[in-house]
Length: 460
Ligand SMILES: Cc1cc2nc3c(=O)[nH]c(=O)nc-3n(C[C@H](O)[C@H](O)[C@H](O)COP(=O)(O)O)c2cc1C
Image 1: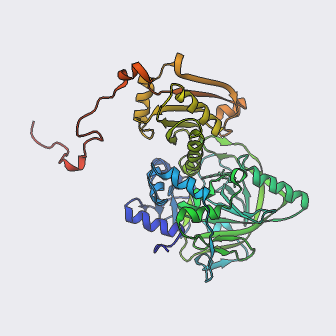
Image 2 (image 1 turned 90 degrees about the horizontal axis):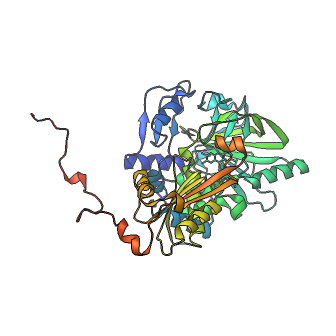
Image 3 (image 1 turned 135 degrees about the horizontal axis):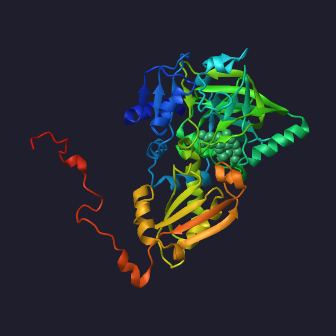
C-alpha cells in the first residue's frame, strides 16, 4: 500500500515533493479570477489556491493539465504510457471495499444541502449560465449488469442541491440507460466525486460502450493495488474512500432542465439545451477538504486524449509499425493528431493516415512523420512538414465526414473535412537526400546543466 494513500491528497503530496505544485496565496474570486489565473499558465501548472474569496476551502486546479506531470502521477513515462494504459484495460483487477471508516465520510451533511454555499464552485467564462463543477466524476450503476460506471462530466450548479448533468453523445451508454429508466419510471442513484487521482481519472476516460468494463477494475490494474472504495451514506453506490468530497443523490425519470451556455472544449460556447437534473440529498467530505477544479476545457481534456492515443496506437499497429501518437493540446487533445511510424513500405504514411482517421472520428487533421521526429515538439513536426511533404503527392483529403461537434466549423456545417499529411521520408534511392545533420557526441543535445552560463554582466 502506498504511504501517501490514494486520491487527490496523495497527488498533492507527490506534486509537492517533485516541485510541481504551486500555491496561490493572493485572494482570488472564484467568479472568473481563479480561472483567469489558471488560464494564464495554460492550465498546465498544478496550483493550490489557498485563499478563495467568500470560502474557507482551498481549490486545486490544473492538476492534470500537463502531459509529463500526468505521466509521473500515473507512475509511467511519456514513451511508456500507452503500454501501461492498454495493459490495464486488458488486465483489469478487483478494487477493495474498505472495512473501516472512510475519510470521505468524516463529515456528512444530509439535510439542507446548498452546494454554492458549501463549495467554492468557480464560474469560468463570461456567458456561462452558472457556476459549474467541471472536474466532478459521476458514479452510477448499470441497470442490467449492476456494474459501477463513472465518468467525468460537467455539472451546472443551480440553487440548493440541484445540478444538471451533461451527458454528451460520446456517452451513448448512459444516454440509453437514462431513457430506459424514464420508460420504466425508475430513479437513477448517482454520486459525484471530487478529489480523485490520476489513475482514476485515466480509467474514467474509457468509453463504456466500447469496452463494457468496470472502470474501477481498470483503475486497480493501473495503480497496481486495489482501489479502496466505500459505500455511499444514502445509497448503495461505491465511491473512492479517500476522495475529498462526494455529492449523493438521484436523477428522477424525465426530470431535466435548461443547461448552458457553457464555454466548451475549444473555447466556444455550447448553447442552452435540456440536461438531466440530479437532486443532491447528501454531501460528504473529508476534514479540511480540498475542492478540485478544472478550467474548461482544453488542457484538462488531456486525460481523454491519453486514452484515445492508446486506442489509436492499437489501431495503427494493425497496418503499420507505429511509434507514438500525440493528440495535441492546441487541437483540444481531440482534433489534431501527430503520428510517428517506422516506415517499412512506400504506402505506410498514407495507411497510417487512414488508420488514424478511422480509429477516432474527432480527428480532423493528421500528420504522419518518421521516428526521427519528436511528435511532442511542434518545431520538429513543422520541420518534417516543411522539408518532407509535397501536397501533390502526400496530401489525403476527405470531404464531409463526421467530426467533433465541439468546434465551430463543424457546428456550422454538421460535417467535417479531413486532411492527412504524409510527412514521412521516401524509401529507396532518394532516402539519402533526407539524412539529418548531427553533432557527434551530442546527438541528444548538450546538457546545459554542465555549463556555467549566465546573463552577461562584464564590460564591453
Ligand atoms: C475535464 C473533462 C470534462 C468532461 N466533460 C464531459 C461532459 O460534460 N459530458 C460528457 O458526456 N463527457 C464529458 N467528458 C468526457 C467523458 O468523461 C468521457 O467521454 C468518458 O469516456 C465517458 O465515459 P462513458 O462512456 O462511461 O460514458 C469530460 C472529460 C473530461 C476529462
